[in-house]
Each structure stands twice: as C-alpha cells, then as structure tokens.
Image (cartoon, rainbow, N blue to C red; front, side):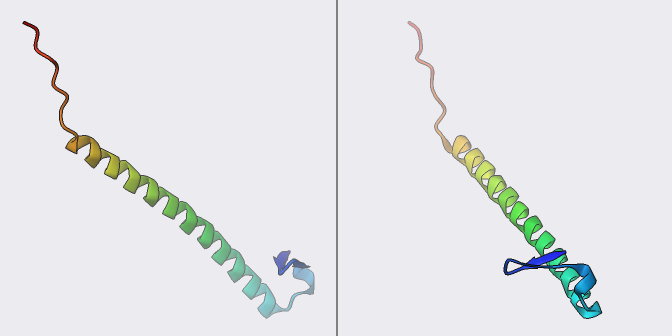
Amino acid sequence: MITIDDVEYSEEEMTYEAKIRAQRISQLREEHINLVLRQQEVEQSITFHAGCIKKEMEPDEVEPEEH
C-alpha cells in the first residue's frame, strides 16, 4: 500500500512497473528521514563544538587574593 496525494494504492492493483516505482518511493522516503536525522546530528555537533570554543576563549576567573 502506498499513498500518493492522499490517494491510497494497493499493491494488488499496481502494474509491475508501478510496484517498482512504489518501492523506490519508499526507499527515497526512508533516505529523506535519514538525511533529516543526520542534519539534526550535524547541527547538534556544530553547537557543541562552538560551545567548546566559547568556553575555551572565556577569560579565566581569577579568585581574589586574601591578605
């Protein structure tokens, strides 16, 4: 079963070529999901590394000396 533009098509009514194309659509949809997840992972990694740089570049806090 595949839905295209809100219309459901069952595998039984599809031609051989349509079945192949439906499989390809499923593969591409899965690839799209994986790419979205990868993008999120990359964005989180960029944020992490940028935070590390900011932390490293902050001046060290100097504790006041006691007299």
